[in-house]
Figure 1 (cartoon, rainbow, N blue to C red):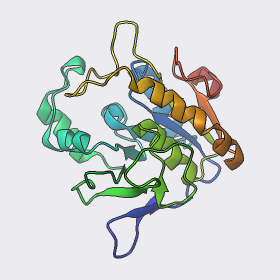
Figure 2 (cartoon, helix red, strand yellow; figure 1 turned 90 degrees about the horizontal axis):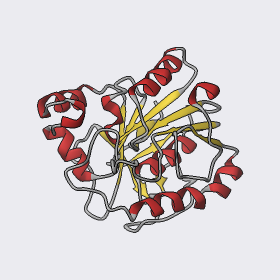
Figure 3 (tube, rainbow, N blue to C red; figure 1 turned 180 degrees about the vertical axis):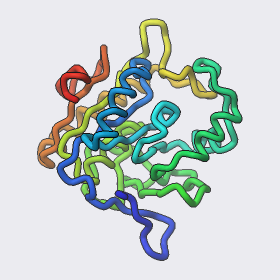
Figure 4 (cartoon, rainbow, N blue to C red; figure 1 turned 45 degrees about the vertical axis):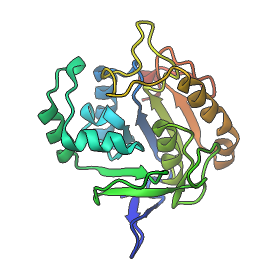
Length: 236
């Protein structure tokens, strides 16, 4: 378990229980496929990797070690149940899958408060109520990078990861306009956010190098140029 509640506090901190591990982070980009997730699942079953599922990726990876989602609206949608017609899931099935997820759940404080669900670990925002760039080295805090995928990367580093493999980190929309592998959120995402995603990754390069963490991007067609682009099967 990498997340532990601070005694007498609503907030949690990260323990370096994944020291020297390879961690796969499943993002929400349109390039993420069930086949690639199954490849990760096989490596996870052999204890070759740890896994963080970001946002809706838990719907493909119920076995993930940790789930991460920053947006309070996302937590409200999935706790209540939200239909995913693009992947054939009714609202009640989504609600049941979220309730049944057995890994640790994590989020971050923001300007409107914290997740109401007490089972979700909450880490502090390293820059207060504003977005920041770089990486946090404080086990109680994350840098937002303006997206949950980046925060999951910071989480993996704090947990002691030696190598991180990114999947579903596209940094752009698909040619057909899709922004996510599962369809769309109830509130659509502005195309301008992609530049923030790419900027956050670029701004963390020096901190990642200083921490001795290798990051590889196995997302097909990714627009994120900060890390070597690789084939998932080659690195697993």
